[in-house]
Length: 162
Length: 162
Length: 162
Image 1: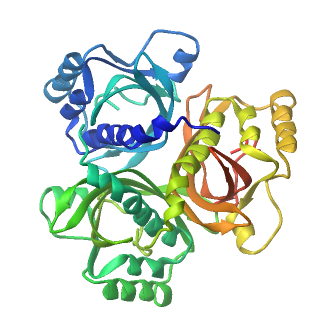
Image 2 (image 1 turned 90 degrees about the horizontal axis):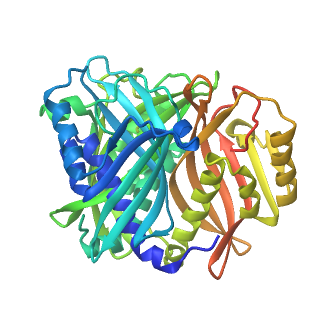
């Protein structure tokens, strides 16, 4: 295992950006994730099954931070669902290369969901994050963030972004 | 995402302290966690539900390392329970600020419990750690450690600290 | 908590090696893990129960990278099993000492398994990794890798290495 040296200096900021996304959702500040994308940033949730076969269908596919903001607002206003929240566990963050001046980053996730009424906690989703991250001076932002779900079956309507 | 630079130098020691707490419990060396608190350190386990509403009720609330030591000793001597052990998964450690010379740190946890007899493994608890950590020279210690549980329902008596 | 300073410089490469093992398996590139062992490297999967009692029985015990390669090839060719894949969550990587010029490293793991047909995801295994890792210039490799399972009961035949 050889690791390019300059990746090491970026690593902590990359890891922190990914943690910040997760924490914003878990702390019920979902609105804040849109600010972690660059303005034209893309956010996609897709099954591993579809991705492996080149199938385009995605559960979520927003092509700008503004569109993601809209989707979150509709979640707050329009959607009716049983109150629940997530808990993100992220692991194995690796910078695996570069593309057009952005870092290609991989990590694994496991998200639990707890129903507020019953207190039941279950594994809601597991999978891999495939991110393109732009670095500039002391900041980092997602150019694209693709979450690949291990399972094709997502138990309920996906209300809150992952 | 901007990250204060001096936090970066502390980060590894903060992360190691949190990992050490988890490993002491998982390796059945629960007594060792008391030494990771400062002498007047506070350790609290509370539901997110209560914390969000400012309700004081906690499952565990010890206000010194000595009191935590007492509680652990009573677990070893007095409590009768089916043998089991935990496995801690910690994720997303972030230094989010400072308060009175200590670092404010957030992380997520997922703890599984395995029954020794049956071998059954389940998700026992998920939630967020809210820590105040004191740094000095090469050492780090918890001034306070608050674990917020996602679920109000903890399936059995909480015997072993989390 | 005091942490030897020279461990800090190795830490990122150690963490990356452990992440690479997990990702190779999760991305269905299981063959690649053999290259992360030194040629005479040992890979063992054993229950915590047996390890605590000094019992030698192991689910997997390969004593060289070549033997691990053989085992993986037989998995690809000979074994018949329902298609499934893993997702590794790793946490709490700590360098806890040295032995014969290698780093002694501990980490926790939780592995989920998703059945391709049904999409069901469950906790497949949890436990602790006990690694000896050789560092040289910019590279890192496992001299030995022992996975201790929390549960004695592994639900099905262990087809894919953990």
